[in-house]
Amino acid sequence: MITPDRPRAADAPDARPYQPAPGPATVRRVTAGAIKRRKGKVLFPVITAYDASFARFVEEAGIDVILVGDSLGNVVLGYDETTPVTMEEMIHHAGAVTRATSRAHVMVDMPFGSYHVSNEDALRNAIRLVKEAGASSVKLEGGAHEAEAIRAITSAGIPVVGHIGVTPQTASMGPGYKPRTHRDRLMADAKAVEAAGAYAIVLEVVDAEIAGEITRELSIPTIGIGSGPQCDSQVLVLYDLLGMYKHSPSFVKRYAEVGAATVDALRNYAEDVRTRTFPE
Ligand code: KIV
Image 1 (cartoon, rainbow, N blue to C red):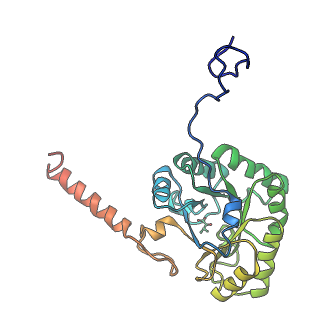
Image 2: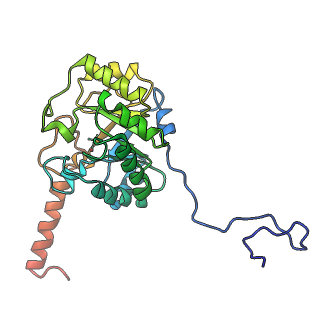
Image 3: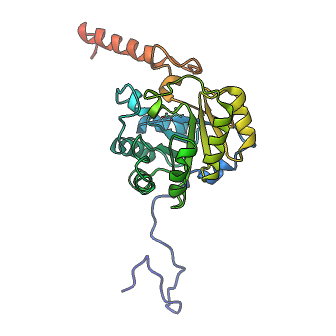
């Protein structure tokens, strides 16, 4: 039987060129390769998002690189640290972000424990983030000591972002959140991450001069947070930028006061209900 969507014999009287069945328009996401090629040419913003609504706002604002950070542990799940965040939680939130966006590159954090046990485990968990959440790439914390895990993941074709300087998953168990100033160690870690195949690297609260030096030395983009203006890109936690909390880290610029505006709106609503002003 010949169906309208299947190729017809060339000599059939009503032969038409083969056309695949119509499907949703395919919009290609920004790739890791495209981000890597921005190095030295285009300064680009990166922002975190953890749900569909905010992810849509991010794309609407023209930002095309989204990080589903494990900072979701602090900002949406109410943990004190990122350490308890699980693979299931990352998949749950990252899936919401990828479903709500079409063009943005969505990098997804590998949570604590998902790449530490073995390289096989690291690869298995990275594959889960791609298959179950639609991640465009994955990010993991650590320098030279995570090089093998980065190699294992990239060998399967999954792009990886490194992350050095302050590494929140282990910060409270050791070195804390103070600015990182050990130049030689930071440079060695950055180079090891690059050599292992990462296509970009986050520098978190690294001394600004050292971050500049690393940026000039590497051939992959550096994405700074609290590491000064010389990085190739900047990333912020969305809720910090929006002013959702009373206090934010000193390096954050608050572009709005959404926390205060939300409390005001809720107070007004509550007052209207109490006084029968709403509904009208
Ligand atoms: O989890 C996160 O949001 C991050 C950024 C702070 C870089 O890793």
